[in-house]
Length: 151
Ligand SMILES: [Zn+2]
Ligand SMILES: [Zn+2]
Image (cartoon, rainbow, N blue to C red; front, side):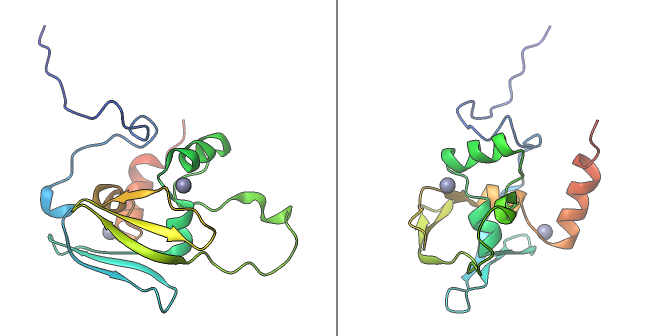
């Protein structure tokens, strides 16, 4: 019997919940260009070293906050990262502006962090996390094909 161990980080709270974490090639998680469309209030775009392009709206990013609090909240409500809270019906039918970060910070060379207008800032969005949740047609299609088969 062989004991080959895969070196995943056992302390990563997201690891067990997320779809299996196959390691991504280095150039797939290395951003070549990062654009945060703060003034437009649109979202973030990343061009990766492997040539792939990803884009996320601020709404998606806020709802995909990887901090422990948000992560557990999503687990309890059965939401996927980026899926907005289903509570809008219970709220006052007022216009709620889409979430926008006040400031954006690089975290080392592996992640980015947003200080949201609502005061939340705990989430550290690693390049790996972002690439795994690329919202482009190609990636969402593959994800739906491989993990979108309940039962
Ligand atoms: Zn959070
Ligand atoms: Zn993609």
